[in-house]
Image 1 (tube, rainbow, N blue to C red):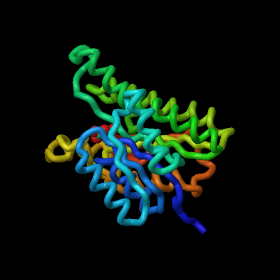
Image 2: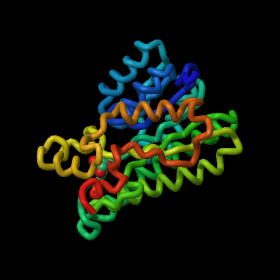
Image 3: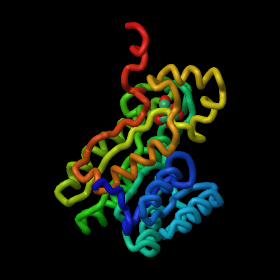
Image 4: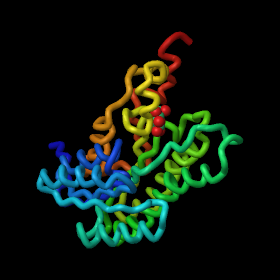
Length: 261
Ligand code: BGC
């Protein structure tokens, strides 16, 4: 019988108070997990997510920390250990698109900031999580990449490089951790309606242009990503590790060839 049951599992979702991360917290707790909600700003939003999890009878705690800061990451895991008693599922979701601009137009500090949060942040988190997971011989790490781990995107060199790097980090950590019963995966969303791309979907012209890039002809909803994260974190996916699962309405399926050729 298929049963996505995460009861008793202790999860931590970075950037869990908005966008896809928030939906992931909801999905993991729907499946019975206890979930810690990491956030960097908007504590009120984090508090509301925590209350929703608790209302389901699961444990939850909000933890403020910057994933790109090693000391804060160490502190976050100490809080996780004392609040939930350890970690079974880590979702590295926190990330930024950064400013749009061609390479020669942006300063190098911009490059560094995007890489620090999207890539180094996920590494620092995985470093702490794997120490615990390898020791207990179980655990799952899911890294939120993007279709842009594969599709180049003019104006977003730092973002695309961070996501491609994260994808390769996933594959390498998966090799390292597999003998210890730990799985590492990437989920690669397409265009999902969240605050990160509001400027595009709130503009009718921008939305029409975006929809043309998607064979299914529409943006995705956050729950359409979050549900798959819950599946991958569960034993239903016990043989899956090292791969990127694209959930993108066909965006990586050569959308232009939906018409003509
Ligand atoms: C970006 C979104 C974008 C989507 C598809 C995501 O990684 O964060 O802003 O809409 O890719 O291009």
